Length: 594
Image (cartoon, rainbow, N blue to C red; front, top):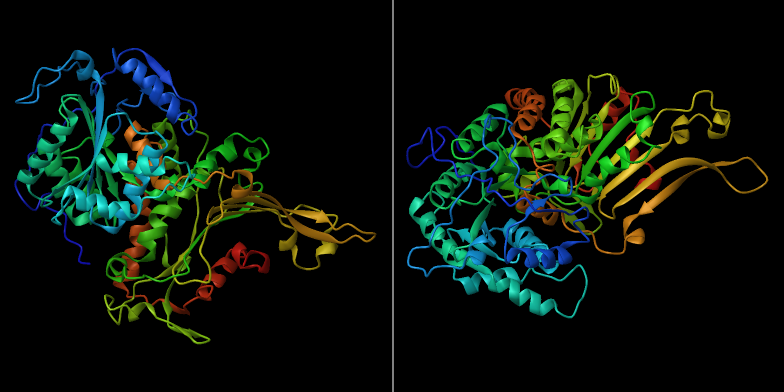
């Protein structure tokens, strides 16, 4: 896929240097309800809201206790008012509306790129799951927007194929599905047409029926048309009295320059607090549990430093190749696709200092400090690879360049391993090893924390020469089969003194039989509530790209050839040498973890 230059910011139409940015901090009354447990409260929250809505609005608060519509003074918002009084508009041609109806907010969710795979497989199912669990507002509608010509009924038929009542099998599943589909509508149009977005705005107003309108736009589209859509939506389809928020999917540029240019262009039409840069990996249950594990368990927090931790490994592997995404993937590669965002975000959460509070800005401030403390990657700290064809028995596996959308001489890496360092007092000298790859032997997403050897270990002779077997290791398995396990040394029952390495295991599906929500469900609900803790701020994005941009330029300018590895293997041999350089053994390569 060709990457279009994002400058100038809009490829169609002139740029208004001081546009009228829609207000998104609509005030609520002083009554408040603090929901401490969102997952267990969606249903009774809906009941409470229905009781209050007949007379007054309430000031909703997120799980961290802060108002859901609070405005941050970060970035380009110095002195922005947190709230202003508004009068409700009268929809043209409509009858006067009762005051109680006027005060009822409504949520309009527009999925731009609704005919794409991401929308069909992830976004619509996530919205239905939220509706199924009564976590969406009483008044909401879902609009699909794309260039494809389609009727409302055709959209409903398309998305109904991917909707499932997967959380449990209650008898009202079919009824809930029908009710959800009735709230789904479609508008076809061009992504750069203000006229088409004006028509979308007209239909949104029809469904909002004079209520307080809040609007969420999800950009499930290629990055080269982000700015066109944001321009049209901001100027023609934003809420004038409620809030307007925009969820932007990665990739956020290809390097520091393109990322900064994209951010600059988006901020021509939106404030930073309206932009929700989504990284779905941050919505994974075990990633969200990372800070809970560390900050609410005394057994871990004192050990979380260079004094006790020898190395940290962040591992992502897939057991399949590009699978029809070769054209997109060849423009980005594994480093941009996985390491610069998913794995680096986990590293920042893992290594950050204790935040002042659970407020989104406090957490993101600490993450930025970690990223700014890291030294940019150099070629000598990185190994890149690319999978090649492989025959296993009667089955033949293709190479990366066998994909018809990939050039035969492509040097794009499908595997990368890197060693990163955080230069601060807590982590000085501790290697953070990243490894990500496609067409490997297994599907895996893990954080592995290897602790130091016990000084003067009385039982070292029982382990022979392999002291690594005597090392404790904490493993946080993000996917699949979510689990936490701690590897400890234990005596094997019997008359002799034989030691064994055993696991203290918390397997989520055994301890928590209820199915874990998909990451998109959590992140969509956070965006609706205005909770920004799991979304990426612009300065955070700048710091992340600063680490990887020099490396990416070196790889491309020097035309570094990736090391080939067979489809279905454990990756290139060079990754083992990289780990050995820092006296580390990859934790996922032992027989017990294979």
